[in-house]
Length: 513
Image 1 (cartoon, rainbow, N blue to C red):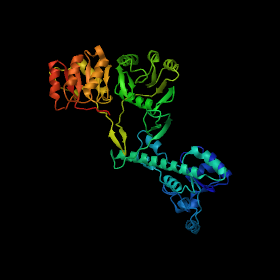
Image 2 (cartoon, helix red, strand yellow):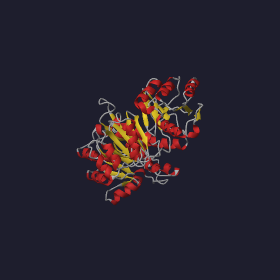
Image 3 (cartoon, rainbow, N blue to C red):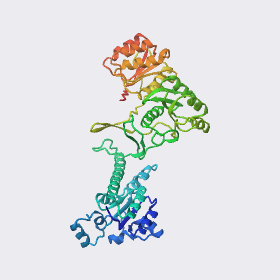
Image 4 (cartoon, rainbow, N blue to C red):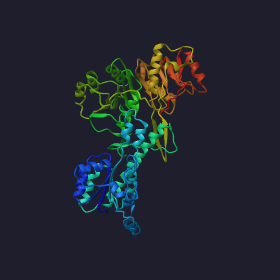
């Protein structure tokens, strides 16, 4: 437990600090402060001791040096129960500091600005603040440290009760070290990016909690949702929920998968997802036409699914969507009429994304393994018509090329082994996550039924043997897109030539585990 007699307050975010300082003053706490915080408190009528009065040294170097002094850190780090420490404090005329209230220079806000100058970013790296926080948090057995204005009320209440509890000090200290760790992580990320250090010797990242979740993938698993501090607009982490129940772990995971696919398209597109795999994708002249195609792709699997669109949801589309049981509808926005229609469904989650467009930068993807973590750049490789290598006697028609490229955009988002059948700018069959490729092909073909005739097929990896090609022949597929690269490519090419199927190689594999 600690008794608060002297406090040091130095904050960049001054939310609630005047009211907090006034309460401290009423409780007889002596207040030391610096720079702008000191001026604000004095203007508000709070009695303040300037930092230079304590250090006996002026604030110098444009404020870079003001609290880095033994009179400050001696007062923070002294062990109150150590006779030696107390003798040294007395010898050097240092008064203990019992409460530190500090938040840091706005580094995140600074680097969030468009075209921020490197010099401005560097100037907003706080030195004295983290040092005081760390000193106070290390000595939390005797010093209370506050980094979050949300804790002001609790601290005042405990001071009024006579002292700050040991448990409170420990919790506040833990929060401080989380805060400084996140602050340093953001700085290290920024500087590493400046020098193109993509895979450094240590990998430190930070995320901010958005919300606790009721449970994870299953009810017995705990879960929470965190957002990257500089997350751009147009994703599920920054989406605005307009209606419906709170998002679940699976909602967020599936929603992210749906967005990844819809961002592949510049034309109006709608994607339906179940368990992170697309069950329907369609593009059209309007978002209503795109939805109709996505729905017709698989009207059974879409039940209980998640919809992502890259255009405004209008009245006609909303009326059609209302007729289906869906978990989430995500779109750049909704017309007033569409919103009114969809909000009549109590539990339907509606997410407004803002602009939905292809990302202009590649993110790093992380996956935990027992005892470690894997990182890789995301699969952002694009393939155009000019990248295609025709390997069969018959070349694909211009229309087949369009459908092949459409299918290729989708297959990379399907769990491996992945096979996708497409026709008329919509999926008609999706085979996902099977242990062998021909198994995925059979699932996709069965789902497509008679629609498979005249369709195109995309495979996320090469055919190790011609059995998948043979299934495509029986189904009536006319053109195939695949990476190529198997030592037995010629076997598949031979079958394709025998039945007049056009086949192209991309030279790009799209495994997704």
